[in-house]
Image 1: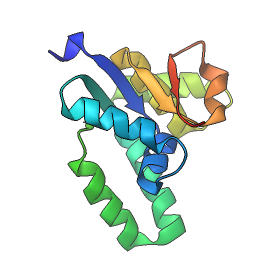
Image 2: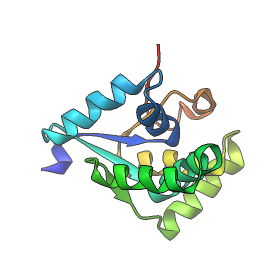
Image 3: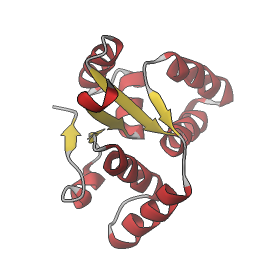
Length: 138
């Protein structure tokens, strides 16, 4: 049952680290394997998926972004719809903390799901009192 499992929300930093084989990729890969085995649940907000895709498209082009989308859809990640409540909560978080609006959605999703936020982005230090963070990296 999902309620009994450890829950995690990926931000775009963690997802891009995994996709690019960068520092922190091993931790994300471990979470993906645990999710595949049914030992935890991994979430990603559609807002953070969009952020990931625009970064890939800007750096490598539309075809690569579409390939990344196909890959992400095959991973054991539950995509979270952006709700009216999350829009309002993300706006509130953004108004009081120095992070991007898309990052505020990751925080709101983690709060909503009672999940740890998976990131290596130092911007999230500003919201460490709002959400538990699983830091990836060295």
